[in-house]
Amino acid sequence: MRAPDDDALGAARVGTALGLACTGPVVVWLGASAFAGAPPAGDVAALGRTALRGLWLALALAIAGAGARGVSSRPRPGIAGLVVMLGVPLPLYLVLWLADAVSPPTLLRGSAALVAGAVLVPAFGAVVRRLAPGERAARLALGALEVVLAAAAWRTSALWLGWVGA
Amino acid sequence: MLARAASADGGLAVEARAAWGGVARAGAWTEVAVAVVSDVGGPARAAADGGAGTVAAAAMLDADAPATLRVPVRVDERGAIDVALDGPAGVWEGAVAVRVAAPDAAVVAHPAGLALDPPAGALAVGITAGDVPERARSFAAVDVVVLDATLSARLAPAARAAVDAHVAGCGRLVGVALPEAERARLHAGAGCGGAFVAFAADGAAAAGAAERLLARRAPPAALAPEAVAGARPSAAARPLAAFFALYAAALGLGAIAVRRVALLVALPIGGTALLALAVAGAAPRVTAVAVAEGESDAPSARVRVRIVLDGVGRATAAVAVPSALAPFDAAAPAVVEVGAHGADAVVALPLGGRRVLDAAGVVPWEPPVRLVAAADGPRATGRRAGGAGWLVWRRRIVALPALAPGETWRPADAGPPPAAVPPWLDALRRVEDGPLVVLPGGPPALARLGGTTPIAVTVIRPEAR
Image 1 (cartoon, rainbow over the protein chains, first blue to last red):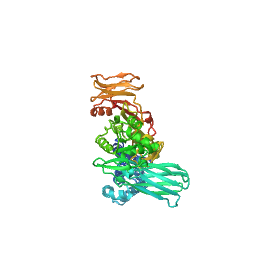
Image 2 (tube, chains in turn purple, green; image 1 turned 135 degrees about the vertical axis):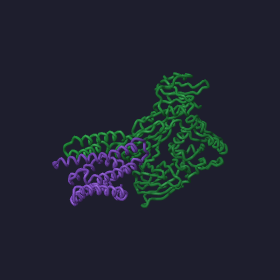
Image 3 (tube, rainbow over the protein chains, first blue to last red; image 1 turned 90 degrees about the horizontal axis):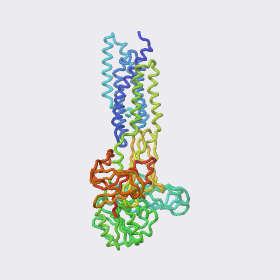
Image 4 (cartoon, each protein chain N blue to C red; image 1 turned 90 degrees about the vertical axis):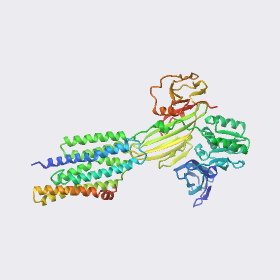
């Protein structure tokens, strides 16, 4: 059996890798489109808002798809791993704020929504795992949960991104 | 065309009046003269907004002494200039109506007492000395200025200097019955070899002269500052690229090698703090490019300037240009302050933001090289010690050596082009037959622009007189 510290470290590593996977392409896209050329005034802010929407959608999909069991099979390390993942884009948030692409309240609302998802999804996964009649049924139920949550995050993205103001 | 009122508390009597008899051209500079008498002495600031940016001028008022603040302003199609005066005895706000000339109608400004039949299709405006603006850029509102001896004698020194700068910048002027000395002075100071200055004996002859001048078009500038500046990526691109590459490497290594969760949490926080320290308050990068152009026998150069501000953090930048080039066209949401020193503005810039400020004017200048377009080919003679440059002639570029004073040089008929030629010079070669001398560097008045040393280029056209 693995020690709790090992679980937390493993989840944090997975979270870091997920955060890099979500943030890296957005940073590369934003750098290539907004900073590499010679944009007229205002373009960086508009591109930054698009980048932020893309980033938050990717993070939401990562929480939905990997939050229940991908980061860790136990809820507390899972939550910690997802929170580490959500910390990875912090420098990008700073850049977007400095570029007038996003306001601090919007960043706070968006981050709070994602943190809430990062807490609720692993907890929900633990409940599903406990209620399932067996290991196989738990795997099936968690798989179904991931698909449903990811589809819901995708389909309702305009709604929740609009709510946070992105 | 004028707004006259007292402030609400009665301590301030203000009269605002647009230049050129209230005729203006959409998108072009004109001027508002704000005459004020205040019960109380102290600082006053007049601001004018014609729909294309706010410009302000400040002055110190003496109690009960009339003073005039002149504010250059660009107008748009709506034909009204909002004017506000904040003085020691109160605040006054008003609007000055202007008549916006049709884009295809030439505007001829002439002394109000001079009988002048305007050329066909032209709009004639009678003016007095108070209608003549005190900045050459405000002459953009009219196509021809007709000046007689009476009007000329009544001009304020600043307005006279503006007329001289207008003429030096190849602006059209018809002098009517001017004294010989003034004619000689105007002709000697005129740009474009004096091709846009004419003299007439009376109003009827002035109308004909104005018509002939209107038929001439000033030669387009050989080089634009934006061509010399070229396309530049955002100043924030390199530091951000370096930071995110290091950050990604640190996170990647951390995910493999770090044995404590706290360190993985600390990495993004530490990276963000470092980035904030590095760029949050970083001043914008200011790049200025100036192109000076003139005939080799002219006493002044026509100058166009482009100042580009690139936001590296979230900060403001103060930009200034000297009086001869003021005011600059502020596309940025900034108030341009004008005064005897020139024009300045404080521009707020976010990271990655870019603002472009253009300015133009005429500066005193003695070209370092005398260029003569003779029948057997051009020849350049050094006037004072200077650096090497290029000669553009018959769509080719020839390296021009540094010439000692009095030394004469002629280009060889054939020979290899210079090894390294800037791209803007190669572009110039494709469209200009020449001969033109192109030198790096500019007139001394351009030594500092926008708080930085500009990239300056001088274009010398052949003698035209």
